[in-house]
Length: 389
Ligand code: FES
Ligand SMILES: [Fe+2]
Figure (tube, rainbow, N blue to C red):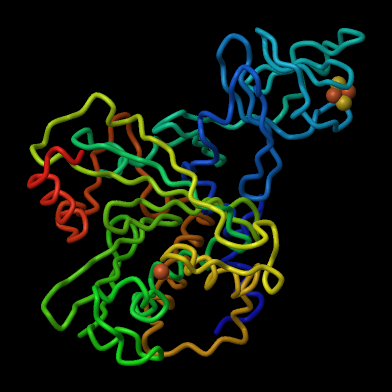
């Protein structure tokens, strides 16, 4: 259980909040690269509680700038792009992708052009997605996780519906191994029937363990048949589970962008040319009506991720942790909250939090994907049936 104050401390994402300061120390995926095109050169995005506009000018520069024009606040999403940048539709003030104001029609106001800048965040296009870093300088490199940077495999992207809830609800689920055997019981039995719906396949499991790693936290599940699975929570907003690296980018306090990048290593270690050009699949919707909120919404529950969305969203747009009753099996959730608080405090002291790398060419971080039974199973299947893929 947390007090309301502790709950806000861990969950708020906006500028100037402790949690928002922590989240601003990382690169986050915020959109698909294909969302910008010649026909649609601007896109409204809300990230970490800030309203922003993605734009691509006619010179090919991509920018992420403040959603409101610095003149008198009209939306830049209606701006017209040209070679030099994006021009506000209202009076034509022109901004480049770095946020410099380079024209101020109808007059030329040198004082404004010299002294005023609009917000512009660094971005990268990588793995068919647009990523941004919204924190203080110096800007760190994107953390070199193996599932993102390894060359010896294929990737695909699964785009899940936007979660109508706070990001931490999804991340607490990543430290909650007990739910698998109950919430997802329709999909994990392998032809067996569960003893009853209350226990599901709980009795398959011998033990759960949790520990802190160099880049986040680990949950470990040991089954009675000797199988072990370990799925790392990659701090702060990623779960690496099997082949998937699951990003939960906070849009604002009560909405979260949910996208999976799946990495499938080649059986022979070869490096395919399209390793960094994933195909994209849209997985939604997971509820009817897609825009509705609980209790008006009806979740489809037709597979694992829709079931997760049901659990996370029905906890509330921002779960009230002052009314929960934690049990022994929730100790991974407790550990996550403790580590999150410690890392927020580190940022408040001016230190880099867990998982931030520095330097020009930081080492690749091994999230143990080759040891993961799911990925291993995929590799074996690929080796036995190379024609499959
Ligand atoms: S509000 Fe944008 S130019 Fe006036
Ligand atoms: Fe789940």
